[in-house]
Amino acid sequence: MSSISRIATIAMAAVALAGGTALTAPPAQAASWNCHASWNEKSFNLPGKPDMTVWARSCVYKDGNTRRARIELRWDQAEPVYGESFDKFAVQVRLERDDTVITSGWCEFKQTLNDNPDGFGSCTSRYVTSSAQYGWTGDGKVVYNINNDGNGDYTWNLHGSGEVKIAPNGLEVGDEPEPEPLPDPADTPEPADTSEPVL
Image 1: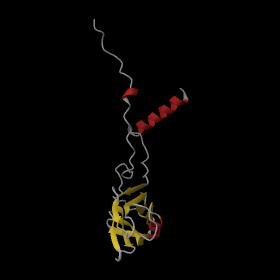
Image 2: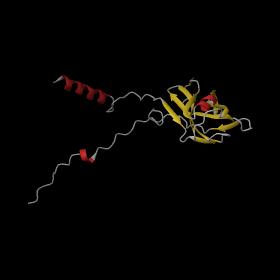
Image 3: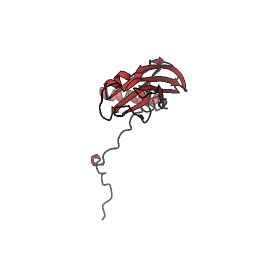
Image 4: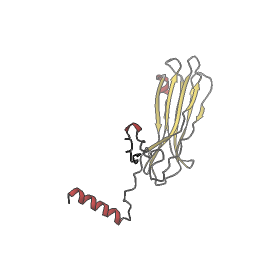
């Protein structure tokens, strides 16, 4: 008996001893960012300057027992004009569990938006370690003050992210492996003709 046949025989015996089911290790939990399905959008009327549109969305990250939250930003000005557009553009990011704030942080984007008429950025919370598996979301808001509009601060509340969950197979929801594609009919051989000849 060849060594390959011996290995195959041993493998089949192991499966039989296990009750006819091959034993496999549980799948590892994959790292995952879960963001709100759509971007929050807001147009800012800037006195003496073209309007600027800002998009923002909340995200939450989970990798095993590690979590964190992030606010992602994109912005674009109708016609690039450099100068003071904002006196404040502060982004708050919050990591929440069951709508309770676990940790939060602030990032100031005022100078970044004033110096760059279009761009992108993000504000991320610190990492938190927890064995609690459910209820984790990212959320946040923007507190802004438009230069020369004669008003004070405004608050723009963002939509929270979706919850990061564990799927029944042990993987993070959204990170389940893609199903195998169906074979291309062009690559599938025609079945053999097994019909009896007509006499």
